Image (cartoon, rainbow, N blue to C red; front, top):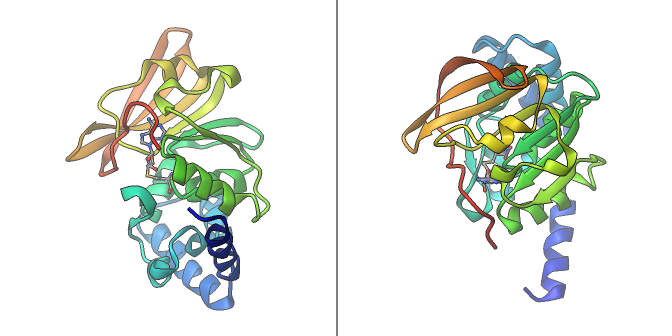
Length: 230
Ligand code: SAH
C-alpha cells in the first residue's frame, strides 16, 4: 500500500478513537446483559466495561459494537462475541501480574480485557495484517502487551512457563506445545472440536505430566490453523 494512504487510514482511525457517554451507556447495558446470561465475576465485567469495544471494530460496524454478537474484522476473522470473551475470561480466572499467553490476537479486544485485569499478556497472531492492526490499536490506547506475529501452535517457549493460556480459535486437538508451556498449577482454556462447533475445555495442570480437564459447553470459533501467513 502507498505510504500516504497508509497514513491517512491511520489518522482516520485516530479520529474515530472516541469513547462518548453514549458508548459508555451502551456498554453498561451490554454488561448488564452479560450478568443476566450468567457471568458472575464482577472483576471481569468491570474490565469489559472499561474497554471500548467499538474501537476494535471497523467503523462500519460501530453501531453493532454493543450487541452481544461476534462481528467480522479484517482477513475473514471475527471479534469474539462479548459473552464468549466474558465466559472464557471467567473460566481462565487470571490473577494480577500473572503471565498470560493468548493465542489469536485478532482485533486485540480480548487482549485489552486481560490487560485491564492486571495480567502480563503475551499474544500471538498468525495473520500479519491483524498483528499490525492490533498493535496500532492497542499501543496508542496506552496498553502494553507483548504482541507476536507467528504460529500459536508453537506457543512462546522463550517466555514459558505461563500461568494461564487462552486459545481464542477452535482447535482440532490439544496442542502439546501449549500444555508443556503451562506452569504447574496453571489453567488453560481452549475450545476443541471441528469446524461445526467446539467444546470449551478447562485444563488444569496439577503436576508436571498431570492434568485435569473439565467441559464447559459448546461454542463456535474460527479455526485454529497451522503456520503463519501474510
Ligand atoms: N481474541 C480475538 C479473537 C479473534 S478470532 C479478538 O478478541 O478479537 C481468532 C484469531 O485466531 C484470528 O485472528 C486468527 O487469525 C487467529 N489464529 C488462528 N490460528 C492461529 C494460530 N495458529 N496462531 C495464532 N493465531 C491464530
